[in-house]
Length: 195
Image 1 (cartoon, rainbow, N blue to C red):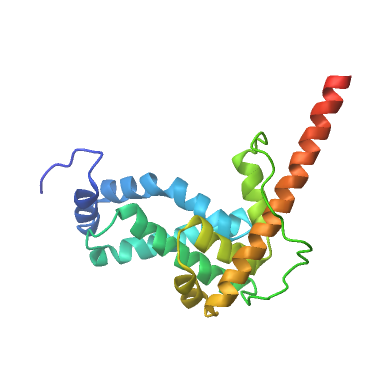
Image 2 (cartoon, rainbow, N blue to C red):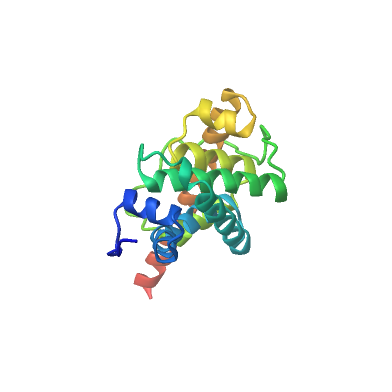
């Protein structure tokens, strides 16, 4: 067997993993695990569940490596497995029924607050995690993962119209939450400069 020099290109990495090379499998895991854990955390609310999704997802990645044909990026292929595993987790642990009124939306926001609001990634993740399950799931699929409404609808077993409605409502809720954070930042900033 030929000696491998790390890091490997995607095609070499997949071939080495498929041959059972433990070092290659470890490299694949370490290459994608941090990003995929972040993805899992957007879908499920608790870190323990996200870690479970990640582990189950990587079991499927390693089991299905022979199905990766090299079309598209390896990361995209791994990501699609993780998304499907996260949706499976939601079906097992939370009600994934998509409600037209998961939460009160009030008036839809007309625009995002000014760009001077500097939110940390952790703040944004928390806001997305606080969305009702249906809103959060469709927002993740369509706004963050780039799935189309027909694709999201097929994955979730809902109509395309429901997918569009859930995304619109999720965006409205997030806009209100960001605006509220903007107001609290502005108030804190003005109080700090008065003192």
